[in-house]
Structures are given as structure tokens and as C-alpha cells.
Image (cartoon, rainbow, N blue to C red; front, side, top):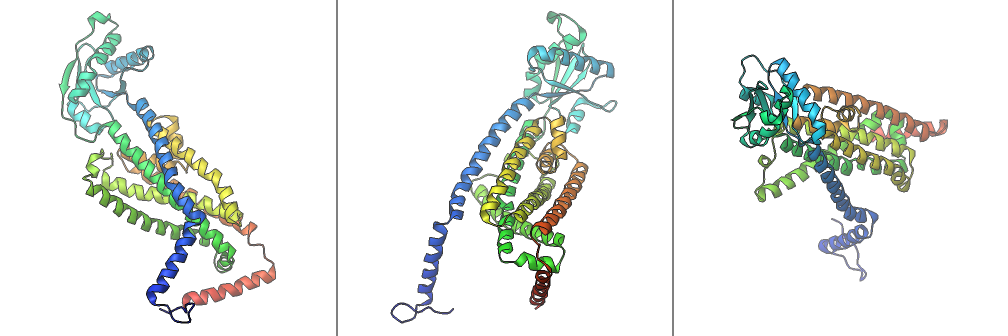
Amino acid sequence: MTTTPDRSGGRLTALSAALVVARRDFSAVLFSRSFLAFLIGPLFMLAVSALASSVGQQVEQNAGRPRLGVAMAPADTAAMTAAARRIDGELDRLLPELVPLRAQPGEAPAATLAGQRGAVDAVLSGTPEHPVLTGSAGMVEAQQVPVRLIAAAALDTRPRAMPKVTLAPVAVPSGTNKIARMRTAQLGQTVLFLLTMLLAGMVLSNLVEEKANKIIEILAAAIPMDAVFLGKLFAMLAVSFVGIAVWGLAAGGVLLGGGHSLAELAAPAVGWPAFLALGVAYFAMAYLLLGAVFLTIGSMASTVREVQTLSMPVTMLQLLVFFFATAAVGAPDSWMARTAQIVPFSSPFTMLARAAMEPGLAPHLLALAWQALWVTLFVRFGAQLFRRRVLKSGPAGGAQGRSGARRWLRLGRA
């Protein structure tokens, strides 16, 4: 290490030079806007978490109605579900939701319930005259009276002649409860959103800096613009994975030190290994989609202030997209959920929640392919916009750019 002369004409020691550099860097960071943003950042995350918790509570209230699968004869199933719909509005949606099931001939209700993997909370079998309710002990006891009321409505009898329900309590495996899985889904969505928003801004600052130093023009003269954009996106994605790995190890150490583990959360419908793998894949797609938009914004801005002005609407829209995807969790079969799965920016969050709520990997492969298509489209559009708005140098400038590119490539090979 080289030494630095002090005011007395002597030489500073290595330790003294390190202290000077440390003091200078400390002062520069302390009075910078980035340090202020760092202080405000956790407050923003807390606000997002509070809003997500509020939306989550509303979703739980809407989705908290028990779902009873009806495994009766087709005519009896139609009568029970029709009666439930007929009197549901009169009781302000206090009755459980009845879902027709296709049980195998001779299959026991307990086996039917286990085969649903948490899609229903109990199974209603038998006949309207003699209904049998199979589920956990607490669930069948709580739903005994509503089932008697629905059966009476299906038979069109007076309330005093309501059929008696036979209760068949069974041990329900831990983690198949719909509301518990919903909490896992919402936690996954929140973590995915915070990591995406926290790390996607890196591509903006990197692009603005390279535009100011004319590095982008040299790269654009050497390789296609699409390759520049893809290279920057995947480089920043790799950096993000490194950051996530460090934060994940630190968070895991804190949780394990506090005696916590994943066992406290309901197991996702696809299982923890597949859920974590899908989380990585959906983070990559969400990051690439948002990063492509941010790169396009960076192509239209020449200063940090312009970047902040142009990126603010995108950030606010992404926040609305996140709450849209969170609200869709409570109604997985509604138009809202289907729309959230199709819209590319909300698709990663919605599909990750679906992995926690419903089994099956085929829909996720299709969703990842759909999101990759939109990543490609956004990258191509951003590259074309960048080429039109920034690379407007004339022939001399183009020759200079090609000469600089050749020098840059020679240095890279060296």
C-alpha cells in the first residue's frame, strides 16, 4: 500500500491512511441522498407490510367461509347446492360454500377429503334425508347446524323437521387448511414484491452512469442493442441472487436462533422444495419484467432526477399491481384471479400464491413461458427506443464509436 505525505512532510502509516479514507467515506455517505433514502427505505417497507396485512385480513374474511365438498348422488348434489345458493343471500353469506365433487364409486368420504388436499374443509355425503359430514372434529361440529338447514331447504321441509346430520370426525393432516395456506401465499407474495422493488432499481442507476460515461455507446457499436439490454438485465439479476442469498442466510440464522422454522407455516400445496424453486423462478421473471421497464425509462432519461421523475409512476403502478394480486388470492376461481394470472406484471405474484394454494406444476410452466415472452417483448421495445433516442450520432460519431468499440473489445480479450 502506498503512503500519503502528511502536513509535516513525513509519511502516514498504513493505519493512519486507512483512517483518513474511512473518515472521508463516512462523511460522504452520511450527508448523501442515498443514505437518507436508505433510512426511509425500511419505513416504506413497513408501510407496504401494513397495507398488505390490511388487504390480507379482508381477503381472509372473504375467503374464510368453509368449503364443503358434496359427494352425493348427482340429483342430491344438485338439490343441496341449489338450496345453499337459494338461502345464502337471505342469511348474508353465513352458510358454508358447497362445492360438487366427483368422488370415485365406493370411495370413502375420508379418502375423498384427503384427495382434495385442502381444497375443501369437509365432505358432505349420504343423502339430504341422512347427510353425513366428514372432516376435522371442530369443523364438523361447527357446520352441523348449517348443513341441517341446507338439507331441510333441499327437502323443502319446515325447520322443525330438519334432518339430523351424522358427524364423522377424522384426523386432517396439518397444513391442509385453506386459510393457513393462504397466509403462506400472502407471505410469499410480500417477500417477492419487496425483493423485486428493492433490487430492480439497480439497473437504473447503472444505466444512467454508463450513459454519462459514454460506455453504452461503445457497447452499442460493438454488439446488438438487445444483447446489451439482456446482458445488463441478467448481470443485475445475478447480483440480486447474491444479495438474496446473503439476506436469506442472515434471516435464517436469526429465525433459527429465535427457535422458529418453516414448520410454523402451512406447507404449500406443491410442497416446500417446489414452492421455493418456483419462488426463485417467479422472482427472476418479475425482476426481468420490471428491470426491462426500468431500462426503457433509463433510455429516456439523462440525469438521476429525470430517472426518479419517470420511474415514480411505474413504482406506484407496481404497488397497485401487488395489491391486485393479493386481493385475487381470496377468490381463486374469479375473473380477478384469472386476470391477475394473465397480466404479466401481476402474474408472478398471483402464480406464486397459486403454488401455495393449489397442487400441480403444469400451470406454472405455462405461466413462466408466458412471462418469458413478455420479457422478450419489453427488452426489444426498450432497445429500439434507446437506439432512437440516444444513439443519434452522425457518421463521424459512428466511426468514433466503432473505433472505441474495437479498443474496448481488445481490452476485454486482454
